[in-house]
Length: 389
Image (cartoon, rainbow, N blue to C red; front, top):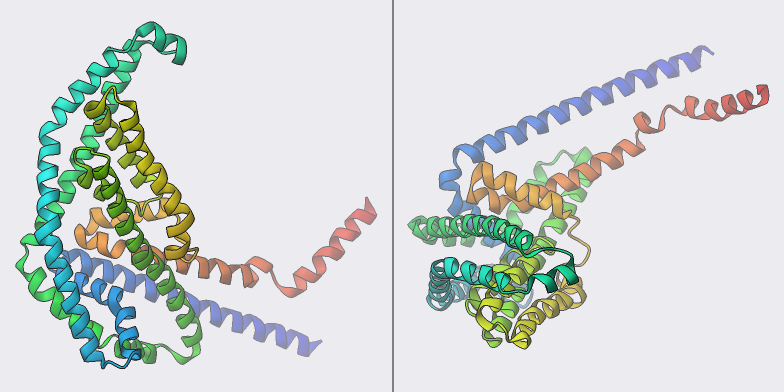
């Protein structure tokens, strides 16, 4: 009996020590996260080239590993990758950016005319036919359309202004072109050594747990950044090509914009469809087949994305809920600007993995399961109550 009491005292003391150590670890990581956020907030104005270099190195590390496995040295693989990236970027800046800038300028300039013509199309609809088929009167439809167009124009203006400001800030910083390639080169060159060094700093008692968490975070981040990034690029090219072949004005701009925001499920395709149909009605009316072709571009794109591209490029490894992803993008973008947008996805993936890990530990802990003695006594007490009843 005395031995049992001593064991209980020892178990209680051990649980208290474990709880105290756990609280210290939680406090340490909360302070570290707060200091990191403060650091990013203070230096967000100069971090862009460095964060862009880190993102670029992370994105290209698998390519460097494959070239290294093929027989090239790490230095040669890094040099070849960065040369290829610079060439592709230069071609994009020379060929694609001027076209997009011209179409964006024309689109903004024609927006008032497009809106007035859309309102004219609504006004020309027979009110009796509209009332009979859809149960709404023309005045209510015009009022709703005006409200929708006003909100849509405000939203698009904000989006385009944000993209333009981000793009101007991005390409006006000379250091971005000078510092980013240098940072990407050295980080890509030393990536494996940096990972090995960080692994050595982890306490040996927790190295397996930390490695598993880091692997899950990398899996989620890589699945999104590499897989979803490639998916957005393919969709943007596909939408832009389809709309251009259909003869739609601003097809390249609308298609690339729809592809760019396709990382948020349904938002990219729905936004692109609404913009395209609005332009198509003004441009092709009353040529219904041409309008149908424009709509078909997005329906076919959604089918290809859902059945071919998404399973192959992204799969089920991302594990980021769309609502959580959108909140992270808005929150980090509001706090840290363009740098926040770059770190939003890795941060969201890290938080999601840590929350799942914490929930798993909680489900295995005595806090959730209770003490063994209490768990064993609970069914007995239940049976005794039933017998008494």
